[in-house]
Image 1: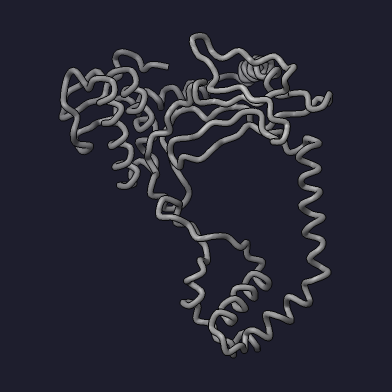
Image 2: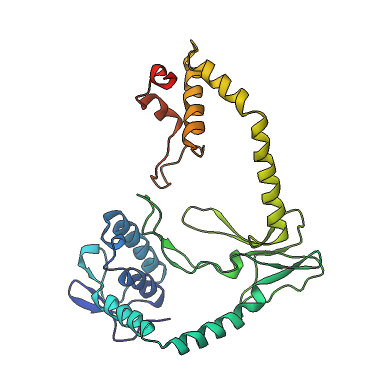
Length: 292
């Protein structure tokens, strides 16, 4: 929804009019102005780079050449969104129930599908709207613009006899597939991590239930081998080979501390808590203390 005409970005002390696409992006930041995210220099830098790119794509600002983040004042936008938030809080319980009922009725047709003749619940059928990426931990891409996903980027996967859902007016789907070897109903690629997102069946669907059943049945098999595994890594703690001792230490940590083993993270992923393979050397644990 466009901002009211009296709400502007102030640049270098001057109220400026932005193209609608750029105004939307500026509004994303304005709405977060008092949050810790918006005070993060990495967040600010990534946001402003993408904001300038959107400005460039839509012809720039007619009132000023926007080149410095420090000269941008988002206070009018922040004040507007604060009023919107307060108005939402002031809605009566009865009105909230009415709005929720309308929303549920509108979404009802998207919540279910038929799988082999059975009515199954669909998981998250919504495509995430545009906004500014937060990320977990000290994520290097925090603040970047999550762009709107048009229907032209969405692949639909349905049965051959099923009716193809109508795309929004003036648009068309990227592709319509009939692949019954996969368990997703729609897919698209997001622009932050360039990863593929899916619409899948809900957690309580029969398909998901069978998948989880097989996974846990596989996990139960571990009880047949755990004693052998423990005996093996305890022996390798005394091995003459460095690689064997490293594997033994890693296995010990996974076993005793119930750690979830994972791979290395790239520079573009969040710097969350992890134990990468090369950090085993840095752990101040000796074979002597592990054996005690």
